Structures are given as structure tokens and as C-alpha cells.
Length: 137
Image (cartoon, rainbow, N blue to C red):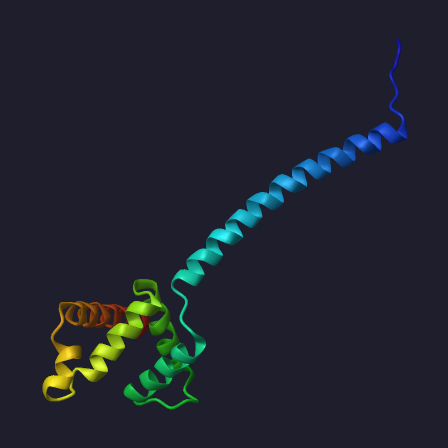
């Protein structure tokens, strides 16, 4: 019976090549998943300033105070759900149209009358209602 023996050097080289090849494929898969999730996050990411402003306004609307955890949590949930439905650009345009549509006369017509304004305000209202139902018990 003739046994072939591996030298420690060739065994180490074999193990190293297996570890490197499996590690590289795993890193590539992991990096691809991170890249995809980063793209999805960026696509509907709202600036922190706007999220905080929304939460403060929401807390005030619901009669809570800043120290009420339930109001803060629910309002934070609400802006997150809105962000899932509207890009920041759509949200920003819709809130601008909503705030300025009450401007009287000809000046307000620019914000009130265009179809884009009506559509975005309608989508924002639907997103807010949906978020309200999902976040507030």
C-alpha cells in the first residue's frame, strides 16, 4: 500500500486557495446585496431635517408633547411609511403645492390649478391616510 503524503506546504497552499476563493465569492455576494439595499435606501431617502420637521408637526397636530414617546414613535413611523410611497422630490413638491394653494388670486393659481399639483396633493393625502392607519392604533 503506497500512501501519498502531502507536504505541509502543499496542504497549506490548498487550504489557503480554498479559503480565498470561497471568501471572495461571499464578499462579492455580500457587497452586491449591500449595494442594492443602499440604492433602495437612497431612492426614497428624505433629509433628516425634513423628517424631524414632519415629526414635530405631526406631534403638534396630534396634541402630544415632545416627551411623549408614543407620539414621537407613531409620527416617526408615519413619515417612514410616506417615504416608502413617495420619493423626496414628489413629497417636497406635494407639500409645497399644499401649503401655497391657499394663496389668493392669480398668484395662488400656479400652485392650485395645474394637474401635476392636483395629482401630487392627492397622492400625498393618500400616503398620509395610509400611514396614519398603519402607524396610529
